[in-house]
Structures are given as C-alpha cells and as structure tokens.
Image (cartoon, rainbow, N blue to C red):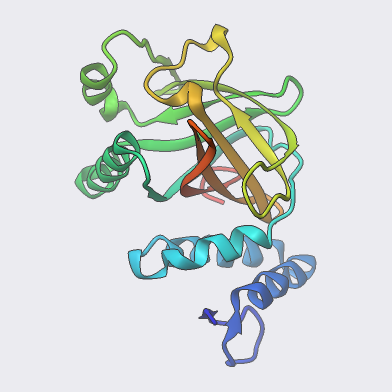
Length: 219
C-alpha cells in the first residue's frame, strides 16, 4: 500500500485514498493549506519511483466544475507513444534549463473552450517540431492546442465521471497526435486537479500519461 505524510496532526502514514480524504476534510477549515499540500503530493508523484501511485490517486478524484482562467500545470509523466515520450523528455529538460515548456491550460467555463499555454522560450522548438502550426501570443505566453471541455464518463478504467478535453474539432486544426488525444481531469481538492492523457488507437483509447493543474497560477 502506498503511503504519504498525513495532512492532519498525526504522524502516522496514510494510504493515498485516506490522504486525499484528509485533504478534503482539511479544505473545509484551511483551503489554502489543503491546496498547497495537494500540490506537494503532485510534486511527490512526479518522481519516477512514485508514478505507480498516480492511477490510484486519479480514481479518488471527482468530476470538477470547470475552472475559469489560467491554471498552472505540472507534468507527471507521458508514455506509451513516441511523440509523448519525446515531449515528456523535452518538458523535463526545459524546466531544468530555465522555465521552458508547457505552462498549463486556460479554461473558459462559460463557452466550454480552452487552450494550452507554453513559455515564450519554447517558440524555436515549437517552430522546428510544428513548422505549419502557428501559436498565438497572450500576456507574454504562447498559446494554442485548443480544446472543448465538458463532463463525460471516461472510456478507460476506472470509468468515472471526469471533465474531458477534446482536441479533435476540425476548426482547431491541432497538430501532431492532438486530434487523437483526450485529456481528462478530476478534482482532488477544489481548484487542484489531476489529469491523464488518453490516445485513440486502433482498438480504443490508451492511457498515455498524467499531469496536474491548479487554479489560479501559483495556487
């Protein structure tokens, strides 16, 4: 059984399921502390030795109301696809070299739309990898990879309600494998979300990685 430090005053270790429950209890008394501890959990699960716990934590999530505005992103791991493995490597290297790569997602709760945000230093790499795709620029960040989002049941176990992000709309003209990509997010505590990436294959959807989001940027 996986364990992590308790969110309460006890020093006894908790299972991830119990820990998520303790964070939600804590949120009623101290929302900021609960959100900070949930983000620390994501940072712990980002370590390769701890990534086996991601599926269990995701299963504890609930389908969230859509955030409205910019969310900060943290990459957990991307796998199962050559392009995704390459992106995972570039994101990790870019962060170490100085804040280069994926910054997060932005949601419009009223229209059910959104897009991804990249740091400005990603521009050259994006031009090389996607020479025919034009990123826009807002508030000093590069934006693109637009999506529609809504509440839906996941096609992959556990088949729980999630907020799904769909990249396949023709009007978005998304590059690479994005039209075959479906992101799903669940709420761990309010405004802190665990996401997973699904890729459509010949025989259905395949799980290909995880990421985290928190609203607003910086928590």
